[in-house]
Image (tube, rainbow over all chains, first blue to last red; front, side, top):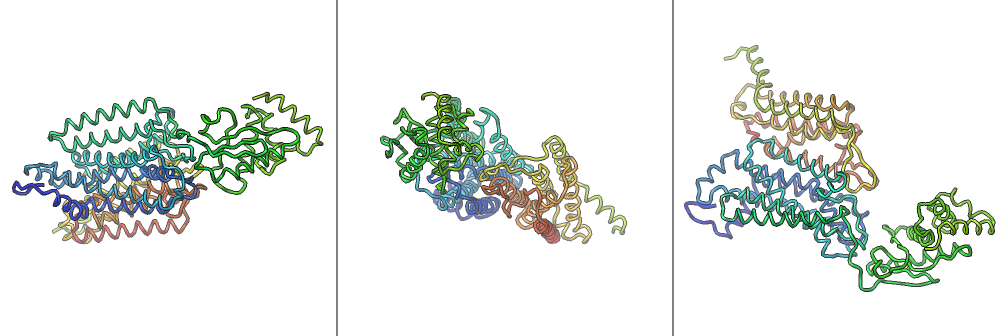
Length: 411
Length: 205
């Protein structure tokens, strides 16, 4: 802002932003509501169901844009709309730097509050989470997309608000953004690429966000933010530079999304060496991050294998998902999502069954075999009716097991 | 000087006058049409629930209904209202109350929804908006009901799909105590608006 031709110094600009504009008027009113809502939700959200590591808290923060993005766009529209309705922009047009200066400082004030809301929610969630897990560069794409979306929403809101006088503008934009986020989350097929939230995902330690998908969406969100800034700060020399950059980012983001799968997760790069243990001719390898579950998992597998004797030998290699490249032969062993008692027995039973049925897991024979093995082991997951064979005399049990094996074939 | 009957006519006319009533009524008609074509139950995007959580569409639509009522708080010549007879001052509140009933009917009739859930949600959202409109200004009054509704829709249920107490507004069957709280919020909102109008405060700011 200029007064009588004097340029406001950089330090006084920040002083005015921090002391005056961000702490009064519409930026303060909308900002406080957004910030307090973020802290409240960050404190109330149940983090006990999240898996260890950084990806789940980051993902929860990103999912919170379901209510933060509508607030952000509405706040931007409210602040800029207030300037327009009260003729502040008309007055600013009579100054050397024009309405751009007034819009800049107001939009920056709104951005400050919305950034504080995003950071506050993320900080509270991180403090309440178990971070003893992997942190990979791809996981940082989640908060990057979170920030890019909120910044884009504030700038789009300001751009619209600086042109639309109606008091309905802000709530209409807020509801519209929520409808977009809601509808795209339930969209079929590749329409789901339009959804920047992945609420149904929990990241096992061998998963990380899909680079192409999340990265592409972050690029497009950044392009939207820059485009809105170009509309907001028109009549400046940087406008066409901004349009060019936004176009480049849109092309890059679109290219990334065009090759991306709609699955929001992908396997992490496999480690140089897995954590392995062997007992009773059973080898189990897990990710180094999961070495704490190696022994209880092996105990459970050995226990299931012993319960199958002498009818059938369960042996060989088992590995956690994502280690296929290190262990070309073997059976996938899914570490239980929660470390509850009995959880290892169940996943060990699943892995043991999978190692025998040779890809025919959906057959009736596989179901009967799983029921029989479940009844003989401590993993009582399957219904009791399917485990009746375990009460038959030994010869009859052997006969049924041989029948099942003949249907499974050799892997 | 107006005599008593003419004054009452003026008060009645002022209840229906103005473009803001037009915007609100137009928006409510659109909302009714949308609800008539919508499913009766919608799935809420509850982030933490491991099973589906639904709410009546009419309950979620009350947010839009309450936002459409907020512009009615605006009085272009608020200083005249402050010096007007009490009958004209209270017209602001009467207009809001009448339009709240109209909004309720516009939501529940096409949605074939009944019960206390839409009443509770509409009263809560409208009351929250009125409290903010009467204290801070109508410009930012949309924030509180919006954040309450959206946060309840997204983070209001736990892993067992149980709706938290603070998210009763999206519950299909709120308890009597929550209905009472909702109606109290609405009553406080109307009182705040009445006080604001009596002081000649321009809710537009």
